Length: 359
Image 1 (spheres, rainbow, N blue to C red):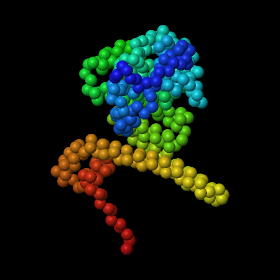
Image 2 (cartoon, rainbow, N blue to C red):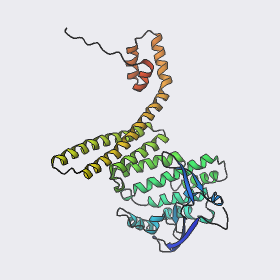
Image 3 (spheres, helix red, strand yellow):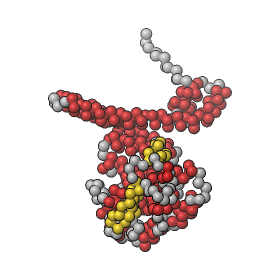
Image 4 (tube, rainbow, N blue to C red):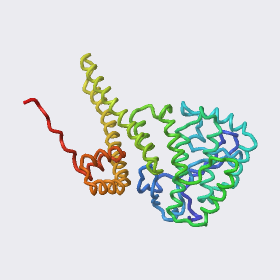
């Protein structure tokens, strides 16, 4: 990156945790474009309009940092920590000022060599982990589950990006050595993308249950689809399917409720054109979520079929060699819990039972 140019605007503000003056930075507007978005919302590539900034990786600068006390948070949480009505900053501040020696040591280990002028993967990993560690100082029942989930997801993206670069030992190896070192103090520190995605999914599930951000059914359904995607990436098909089923079941209940609402308002003479359009718009958004869930469910079924098919074919071949009837084989495959679509694929549709009437 050119020394004469900078993509940043620097700003000095009081740290909300210790009041010391902290210089941080944010990107000038419209300097880069996001190209490609993965199903878990990870940006595949950032295209800079000025080639001299290509060595700068925007995700590395997601957090703001206080060099004095090492407090780390997003720009909004750093400058306006109590703006959201559901903010837990006051609790966090008390916990931060009452850290025990081991916690203080961890904060220093993670924040001791952060230098935004030389930001690299190792520093970015440390500052992301520091943001998580600070948030987890708060007792479990007071944690911002949505915030923690998003932080862990971002750390997972960092691991993914480094793996995609094929980095052998220039930065990844020292980072892994550092993680091994701090694991003696922080036993649950994530070591890879899969760790991060699993923890993110777990926190997102808690957020779905009680976080105000997901009180709207559309937002909540979108979150559950993200959770399903995270579990798919960690190959936990059972939990992924549970998340998808939640979207489908919640959506069907909502559609029934909306239909009843329209009927009641129509009977009461309150169903204006604008009111009907409002109800229909929300129902359509829910339908869109259900369509996405249905497609994800079918994708999962195809994954299960691909995994089960070799064994199922062996069972079919063996039983056919023994002269077993097709319907007997079908029942055996059902008993062995093979996917119904796979059974149909291998044996065709079941024979319809003849109706034995009296005439």
